[in-house]
Length: 446
Image 1: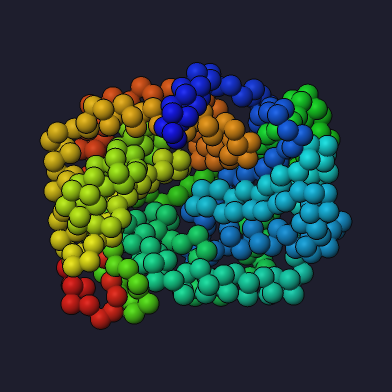
Image 2: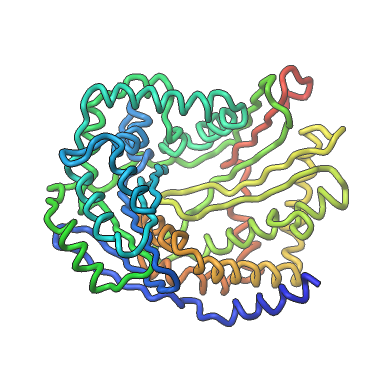
């Protein structure tokens, strides 16, 4: 019965034009880029400010400063007391939050459309008028240290991931955790935070994305009113990061911890990101990840390892091309009872080798392409997701045209392009293979 309803709904979704949203863009004289996405189905607006700065832009010895300042941005200005920003948003029926990645730092509010002017005023105020008393800095430093305690130091899988990423990048700062190394976090100062803020938190280093029940002309007027008076940072330097050298040897790590409940093996390969004007290989890798590890019952790894040989109880493949610099393609396998990590790893290598010989199954390839196309269309129903799609893409170096073209580029991927991308990326010399094991374990020595 479910299938009878799913098929017509899917066909209806695929009949929707790929670029159904109404998009407009302008830049204020002070350099602030503004993207407006109209969606009048509900009287709600998402207001997001993205800064073109993330943890991978930090200087050596200051890991965690980007995330630390994200926390401090809620401490107050000349007009607002610490915490009052979020209190005002909540009092007006909205919600707000922020996040830091390796490439960007973003702040957002979701609220009734008639409160947009208020949100712009609040966000513009803290873009240039942040106040940081030493006591607030000291308190928040303890908060982020406790966050590291809870989310990383107390979780063996998180520590394992941290160690793997450090092994994956030989020189680039993608190998350094966003939250920071503890010994460097402990040394972060008020002056470090102010220097970061004064340099990078400026209209000419930001992207404003407004999505929802809005009129572009009104958004422009409100942006000019609230953000227009802000002075840009003079002589803002271009983003400069250490380049990754050629990787010539596979790295292997084993992380053992008595708290590990379920051992697993994971391998990540260096992979290209979505480059401006050249997204075809990234599109092929996106399809490859779905083919290899999308759904257990239909993916290559799932069918071969979970159902046919019952070697594994879980398989996945993953790739996210939205990145300023080279990223990862990878897979993970949780072995079934009685199957060692070495046996699981060997089984995956066998499946991958056979896939490179045979290529994708035509029926499965067609199904995956249809599924991806449907997901792109369904994603337009989420206003916040749309705002994030554009903000994340633009702050990671893509253009509006790149973001608009992405669904069509995905749709044009061929089986031959997928195999070519797989042969290029599945290179063991640029890979890190990791075992997460429970200590003590005889199989902890690969």
